[in-house]
Image (cartoon, rainbow, N blue to C red; front, side):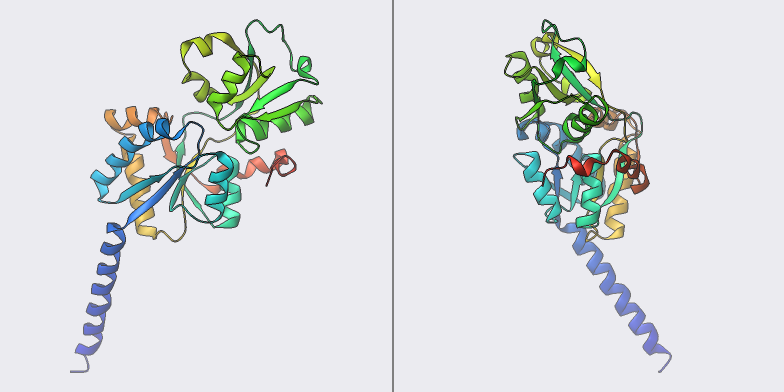
Length: 276
């Protein structure tokens, strides 16, 4: 009889654990996406990906839209999202504030900021922007603003007036309509603009390159669910449909992400330019 008690308890614990895991899988997880575009465009890119994840895992992910990058920062720092696609500097902040864990990223490219001016502006060097207005999506957008402002200030000694216009698309439009002399963005958002916008602009300068945006998970998400989500994203990169969906993010060659991918950012001393 005594020998059966441990077996009973083992069976009970195993059953309770299995029920708990199944219950966790059935819950709806939230995912936040850094708002480089307006929310309709983000949903158009991400909802088909999330549908594929749910189809292959049974795990439902609900996209939570943030109106601006500062709103997104406040939300991940408060732990609002179970999963979040964030810029490389964000993951350093999110790790410190909530313990977010990077899962996957694009291993096929590096991220750099670009500085654009009008084709007919007569501006041919960074030095020509001294004393000018430059548009940025938000103070803490990494390549488009944070890294760019640090690069212009520290390396080129350019003094400029930053104008924050909320989205990358607004940056490019402000430059085209001559509200600002230049604007900070990233290659992927420039590529996705209408032809009349792209055709009116030229790239004047690029920042140093860093590892691109990770998809990260809050530590409250179980290790099993984190692993399932990570492996399913990686599997999407192995079939034609999945690759075409990820290319719109864009993720050209999806792979695992680690915190060590992002610690080199510390050498740029970006905390001096970060706006809380």
